Length: 478
Image 1 (cartoon, one colour):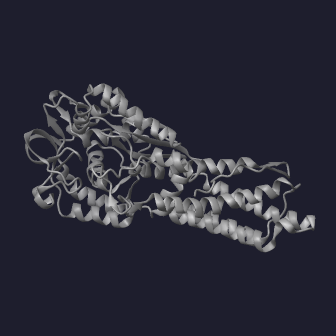
Image 2 (cartoon, rainbow, N blue to C red; image 1 turned 45 degrees about the vertical axis):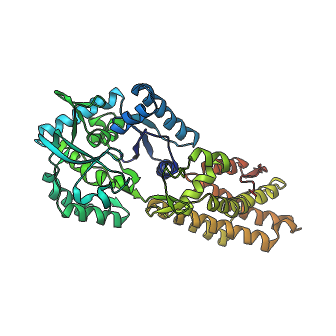
Image 3 (cartoon, one colour; image 1 turned 120 degrees about the horizontal axis):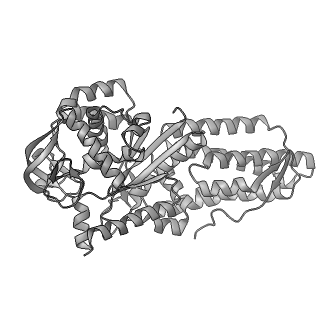
């Protein structure tokens, strides 16, 4: 059990195809999954799609498609997108799968048995776009949804409620005992402040809806999205028994759904008598060239388009290096191109090409590293380990590029290519090839394709190096 690691992304709505914000969440989770796998852990990494929502029904109608055909088509787009981006997920879950409906029903019965599900009448504002009920005071100017800036609909219907208010103090007690339950810390402070102001019971079903998982013993009601969607994390582990053996270590998500995961989800698990996840890890929102992502503005970016233009690793590197994780950030293709040329083409790519071209010509033997290189490699490894553990991906990558810069200075200052003395030249080249090898190793979770290409070009047979030149990792872009 100690050797297991379980990380999730949210399950994404399928009313449209993935955009760059979805890719950011999924890539960040992929880095952690790969990193923990590299630490020798047995990794479960889940992602998927949430199909049981009114917005799915509306989207199918908009496209004039039968609902099952629409969900099959869109789920295929999402799954193939992650495959094309090289995401290493071990499970892709759809909430229309029979395995999920069974677990949701079992989970509902557990909350019901705890006395936490009751029937009542709901009246209030409902935003279909974010599948959320809002109080009047939560709406922004002119009564609009605070997230989507659209007018919610007034809903008045019989629902089943979850007794969330019952768990206000247990949640606060849990937060006090688990000071890193939500990261970064300032997001956790927002969650705690919200709970301290008081919790109200929440609607957990919708009346007379034709799409969704029926409430057990009441086919006139379907289970509301959060009481259905959040349970996917248990489904992935094979059901309640699997979750009891190993709940999620990390749920990763954007900030607009942090409250649901940090408040409603742990309260549901408390009600069901199940263990809570280890940590909720939250990142900020994206703008595109300083403007909020909006379909109406036409600035939604397809991650596959960016990957096709610049390469998967370049896209991963830019997202992880440019935007401090947890904070709001801005995506700009101009900035991506600048990072590509300066950091990847002129930085890692040029350094790797020069070292491998020199090493290919030599009979290099394993030897003792100069102390300066030992220290540089050790510093890089330690910094990458600590910063990745803290989700400071941009600082982890900065440490790697500092090591590359160190190697570049050494190569140029010593003019290694021009040293006539074979022993001296080979000793210095051994320092450089060792640095490059270690750079590739620590970059494996971040830019896996490029890392593997470098590692494959540095092969040791016993104590003898067989290095070979490689095609440019990142050809410069004009």
